[in-house]
Length: 176
Image (tube, rainbow, N blue to C red; front, side):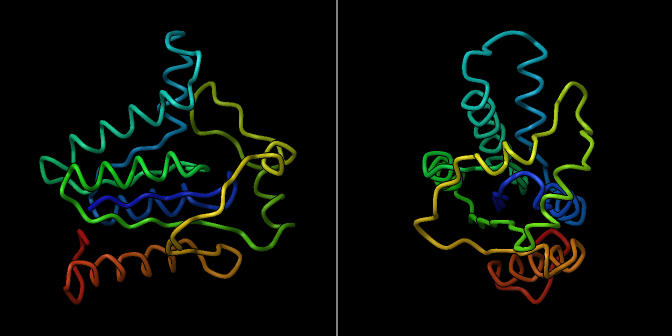
């Protein structure tokens, strides 16, 4: 199964994605980590965003093909990146679960962005202004949407695990 988290920085998607990946014992791919590694290598830096997503796409596909479940954590702001994940799921003969993480409380969202510290060496966290200015296209097909202003990360992981179990036709399964 391919589970793709999308949403603006500071919404809580990394916390939820990491928690779900740990619970499922799934491969965890974080776009920020891949992009920063490309920057640090000082190669292919012309379009780090596109390069980071393409590397993540291929890593996800290779893991799906050997039977691993994959959790992807990225902004996925445009239709092109979302379509690429659909294509990877199809090529890997895997179900796809798209999850959009939002924070409907703008003051809380801003607080998170302004107080966060990067856990990736060399990565400068975005500013609130850059989050507000971020291009984020509307979805063509509605994903599962998690609002972290209304739900804790623990509750979100439990909800997503239940959704995975339903997709697999089981009552519950620690690996979805």
